[in-house]
Amino acid sequence: MTALIGEQIDTAPLEHEDWRVGFVEFARSYRRAFAAHPHIVATVSARAVRTDVALRAYDRAFAAFERFGWDGHTASVVMAAIDFLVLGSAIETFKGGFDRPAGAYDPDYPHLAGALRAAGDDDIDDLGFELGLAAVVAWLERVEAKTTQG
Image (tube, rainbow, N blue to C red; front, side, top):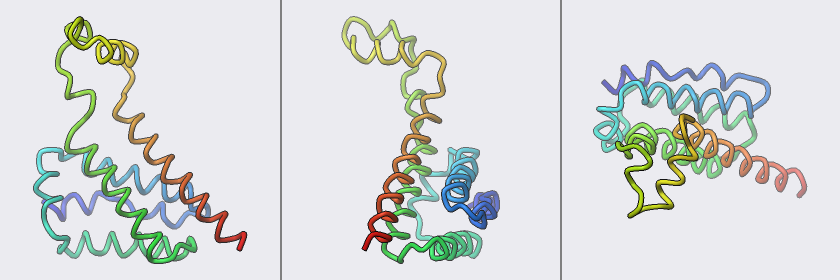
């Protein structure tokens, strides 16, 4: 099953000339692959990475990160962050954790109820993933700026 998921991760975006575009599209593809199989994510994420498909995907990602100018430490930190974002969002959705209408959480949890009402029909899980991804990109841009400055 790990191989099936790994084959669905598109590493081609990592070839894009703009690392931001390639990295973001790769991360989204990685998320889509795992989101399609949420019932096995906990099992897969608890195992060591041993399949050729998964190891090749990581190797392609790290090769791209090297081309982007990231040292091994930065690349590892970034891949860990993406793993956390992808696997965490695939294991448990935020919005799916609240199975009652927002008003049902009133009056005991009024702030929670208000936040759920405010979220409405928005896909909070997608927006949360995109926020996390944007934070990783912003961090990388700061690292890049420090590297080019001195």
